[in-house]
Image (tube, rainbow, N blue to C red; front, top):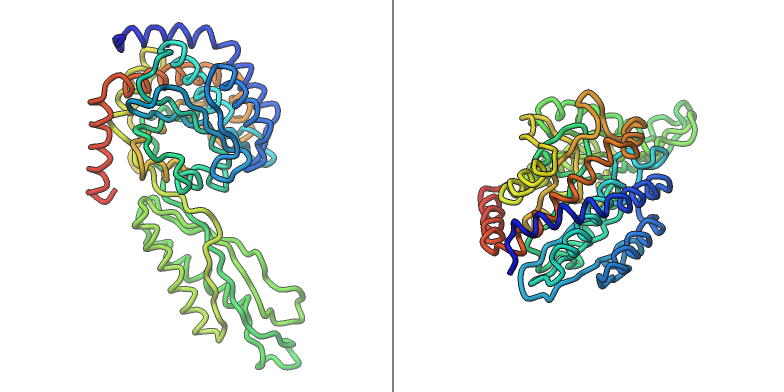
Length: 396
């Protein structure tokens, strides 16, 4: 069994050798952005690279045409998963830098296989579509893709360099009100105004919002409000995005939305219909044991991460669903300054510039070294599982 230090050195050299090819692939993804569940070209490119390197590739995983897995190793030890995102945003392209996530995960897999060709255990690469709406990882979790995995590793480019990701639980609900159509002057008393009910729901939720804890919120839009101004709307509908710092708080917020809708329906003589309208993203449970390993290797590769700023939350991701099942990390590595934001044209530009390349390559090396630590040091994986169980017991 080689020493971890020698494997780390070989990973560093392998990553440097792979750097030109990895950047070409990241730029190819950047030039051809594909949105949720439409990432056919991206998935094919990444799968082909892994297959050419000797990985066994399975496509159409979890019933998703653009999901795949690739694996190597003898299966006799720990299983480490490297997660690749590659979906883009409508109209903005890779304004969340998923081309860099794919490049780093691919680079980590190839570098680790080069440095440790005879793996006692399993190195699993998981292609995870539709993080930006659709929840590919959540679907894969439920399909059993992560069963038997001991560590799930990925990085995310950002405007902060943080060792862990303060990501909240999130879900969307559709609320429809069924009323009765009428002419507003001819027979106004016969009407039951569904749109008025929906407006009252927005007012009630604005009051709820003022007392929500930090990191939780409700944001809604009107998706159906009637067809003509001279007809009392018999149906109106809104879509509401709910976020909670934890899954428990999201459950409470969901119950609050339902109570408000039912109360408004009672007051307006309408009927409320509340239905889940998206895949639910769980809050992210960072694994401190694995994060410490990653941070040390990233520093060795020339970049550093610190602790998140208290009270700052960075949205939600389906990595939360993975982290509820297996030890996981999702560090942020900055490619723009903290006064910037992702999901912007400037962030999309940075994902194709030298600052994006630097973060991708350093993260690829650190991910590969962290994966090597789990494969070569069984006690590390045991500590990571203990950390996850401790957080579960604490309700987080």
